[in-house]
Image (cartoon, rainbow over all chains, first blue to last red; front, top):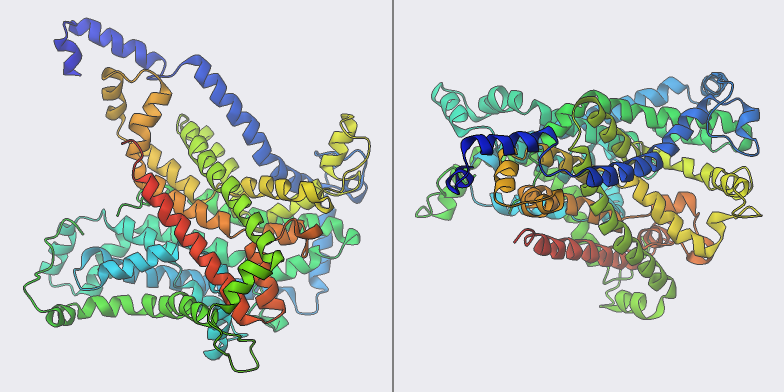
Length: 302
Length: 306
């Protein structure tokens, strides 16, 4: 700033310049605003339209679902589809509460264990110095560079060999070691000042004590984020690869079975689509600020 | 890590390992599982890719046989590979640029509009099976939204059976995939952009940055470089793994394999035919493609702003 003043500009000229820029934001032309805003609106409509259709379809009575020309917006909203869904749910062979319980167990244990394991490993990787730390972390980064489909077949063999096929554990245990969680946790922990840890050590806290009383409370946004990401993964998993018993299958599976019933169940299927999409979106809405706070530290430095 | 002095390297390695006892204990639960469910599977997959394993007879070592068959004899694999590359080359960079572009525009907003726009763009990627709505949009008779709309506007006279017409399959799948692709990378960009020090922009304006495009290139992008690298990893991995969208919209097998990708091909051989050796070779090729592309793009991105 001082540069301009030295170039023979008076202070009043300088402040004039600052104020005129600030009235409209710095470096923002009207044409550019219009262009980008227009683009945003067009793409925003494209993004949101299918979601709007899901909501409207869920509220449509049957005669509106099969109608030509098709209408996006519902004329006579009804909760018929949801009542249909409840009737179908209460008639299922395995009580529907069982599917809900399965989903709660799998995503509950999967999420809690993942947050705990990943934080416990992220702390020494961030704040301790020991041989192999770099190697381990670069392996985790490497694991984010390929998707789980690559390891699916050997994973199946390993889970069979461990004897946990067709149990909840087959879904829960692998999910504890996802790479993204450890990565985000470690990047977030980097910003905890070392002095905080030092002073806790001087007060006589052991490493587990430091972890539990100093680190964990300070990374709350990160564990909320991990929990949400993990929940989204487990929520959308039908478990069809590992779970064979009907009594173990999650809600996602049961809902898809209902939705697969063809034209006769088009209404209930629309209600299913609504429920399956609404739950993760609601979770994200509630935790949006924590998630964004965690993602600020997500950068890959090397 | 950089804040602390580097470990005392005059000490012997064994002594340093012994000192790290607590650290290793804390790492143990995560990395034991990581080893069992990530490292070991990759190694197993690479090992079996050189054999004829089929789950019931003993695997026989056949060297590069599976790979030779994949590359030279299997036309279906070449189709799948070609489709996957088209997918990756289009959806990877396009979704990456879209993530960045929208995050950048959203960054101009504050408060409620900002939260709403973030949700609108991010929601499709987290709503699980919500993309099945495209089945209804693309329904092949006149009750489908797209057909109905186009017929009303008189663009077409007859309903188009979108997912059963070879030339539409891949483009339509790409559009749906793009709709789904503003995920973790997008969030990282939004978060990264909001932390940029505002005084950088003021200093830049005084130093001669004239418009938002210069500002983007000279100030914004270099400032979020770590997020750019992270976002690239997320988008690239995702763009090579396309399978579910294809299976659920185009069916399996799709018309003349127009929607087949390496992953659907892999599921076909591993999950249905139990040709584990062959499937492992496919998985290893996919692994190489994903990791190789990621490493290459990381190298390129280091140069941003320089």
